[in-house]
Image (cartoon, rainbow, N blue to C red; front, side, top):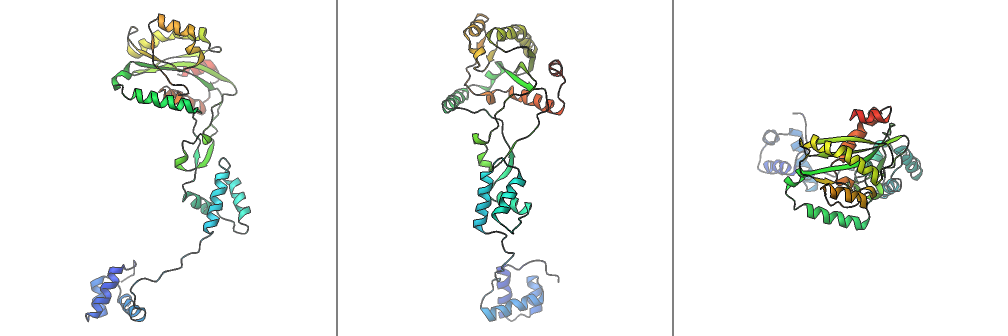
Length: 307
């Protein structure tokens, strides 16, 4: 019989008591399911040591001590945004002659939950606006889900017309996912274009190209030229009652804009500041940015045409 596993404590005890009961080693091996020599060694060991437990094995020695692990972890936490090779050079300096492999280092930090993760793109939210956001969320939680069928979400978004697919990473644990220190602020750069769009329960509306900076006058012009057609496109009826969502940008909250909305009977959804992540149209913008990264448009007109 080929040895395939270690015998457990109960099996070792069974071998010993079967031997005490007068069974031969051949009978014991057949009953327990082990080799005869194994049964013999277990009985002999008990006679010498009085124990049936397996002897502790030393095993492979640790590459570095617990103190060394703390040093490695500290280096990673000090170099959150560094590349792995840069961190390894720092570790090699701390452990001269060790030359720890990449696999060993990754195993050490993974044991403590530290991994290389993509940095989140999130807005930096002030403490007071966090309170307002929570109050708004608790109020909206009481809304029946059917109410959201009447909401049109809108927003402007700036797109870069170059491939900016560079991904920024950070060494962090899973519980540090919402730490603002590790977020990536989204700053526009290079050749870019601003668009306005909206989305409702049945799909998206128009995508309007913003030819200049959006102030109150220009924003009202965008709404006049696009909002009626968007309502017709989303609901199939231009006269469909709806609740209009917009953020708190200066051009949205200007007295002239508020007067236009009120005179046209357009009710707006109360909206907390610094909350683009609550707007479902962000999913549309994210999709568009992914497409642009793969195949950047040649000009502004091509961007609008593609969507």
